[in-house]
Picture: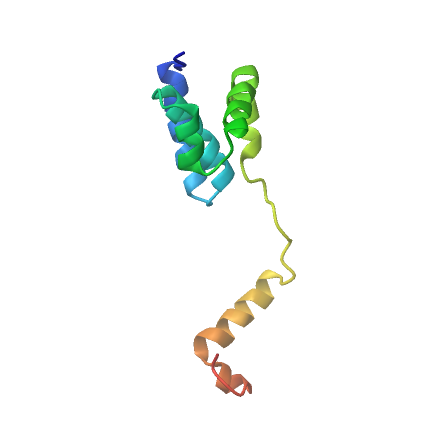
Length: 112
């Protein structure tokens, strides 16, 4: 059984993979790479081995993509995840000045 995607879909998957590389979004990268490897005709077992995921995950990602297309895939982009910074911009600038000049000049015992 061969599964292929149209040219527009393949180009979009390639662009999604490039987007995932910038913020190191490993999950989105693996999903888009998995779908591209399926399009290339690789076996599901070899895809699972290459990406270090289970065979069931390959089937799940394919079924999610077939049912929901790019609306499902776009849900895996980073959306401001993580802890909010405790320092405001003025405090960040002060900290940068301390580090850039020398911590010894500010009363610290070492420069590390």
